[in-house]
Length: 209
Ligand code: VGL
Ligand code: ZN
Image (cartoon, rainbow, N blue to C red; front, side, top):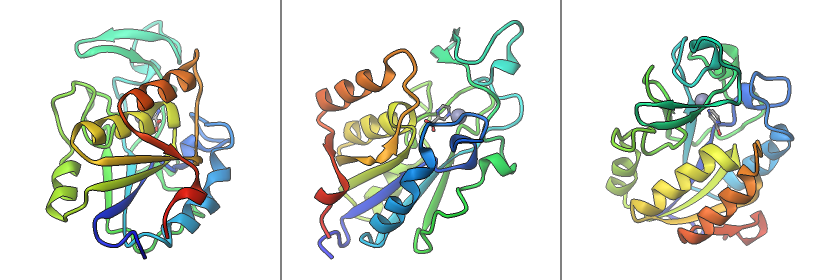
């Protein structure tokens, strides 16, 4: 296993609400689950991120009078896309996809728990100040290289990848193990931003092991 101790797989938001039929469906979101399971077998260290919002979260259109999902509004920390209510903590929509099979994952990190601040990234909330502690966890365990998979490529995967780079990790995003929302060109923009930041975009057959 070349991915021994310094490398981890970070699985982003493979949750019912992001799967077709859920509240914020990512097209083909279900199709990546078998591939993620196969990739998971190659990693000793697996971390799962879970979008986990309190009811009435600031990112929900329903929390703002006269606003519709997918509009962008200005919040104290900057622009915020408004979403349908999704991944409300401890609801069925927030559960991991039932076929996700990563029994050796040691950490599930929940994010977006602050009622007033969104967190696409598994590392830093949208105020860009509040950390989830994930970088510290990884560093304490000697991990320096991350492979990212999951949903959505152009939101939570991208922001997690950018923050991981900024925190000094080597970062690979496994494109065929991700799917995008693609809102107003967000997919092309995400690819560009990740490339500029030095995130390596690879396919599953390029993952060692
Ligand atoms: C996500 C929008 C809102 C994601 C989470 O997982 O990409 N997108 N919350
Ligand atoms: Zn969310």
